[in-house]
Image (cartoon, rainbow, N blue to C red; front, side, top):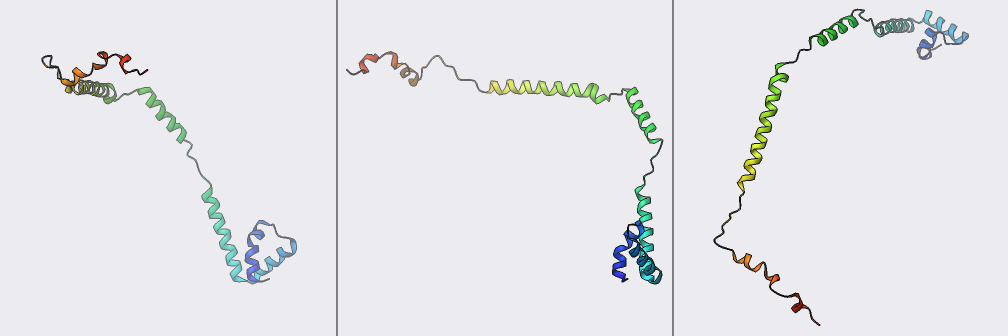
Length: 139
C-alpha cells in the first residue's frame, strides 16, 4: 500500500469502518512506514485534545448565585433619585418652556389695527354688492 492511500484511509481505520482486507493492509503499512505511523499518532492526539476542548464543565453554583442576585435586586426596590425627583422636574420645566415659547411665538405677530384710515383696497373689495348681476347677463 502506498503512503497517499494509507493517509486517506487513516480516519476510517481509526473508526473501524474499513473492510477486513484493507484494514489489514493499513495495519501492515503502519507497522512498516514510520512517517504514516507518526501521522496516525498525531491525529489520535489531536482528536483527543479536540474532544477535551468540546467538553464543557459547568459551575454548579452559578445558577444559585444568579438567582440570589435577582432576589436581592427585587427585594431592595431601590429607585434612584433621578427617577424620583429629577425626571418629573425636568419634564415640568420642559413643558413650561414649550408653553411659554408657544405664547411668545403667537404674540409676535399682531396685525396693526387702525380705525382712522381705511385702505383703498378695502373700499373696492365690496364692489360686487354695488353692481347688479342682471347687467352682466346678455340676452
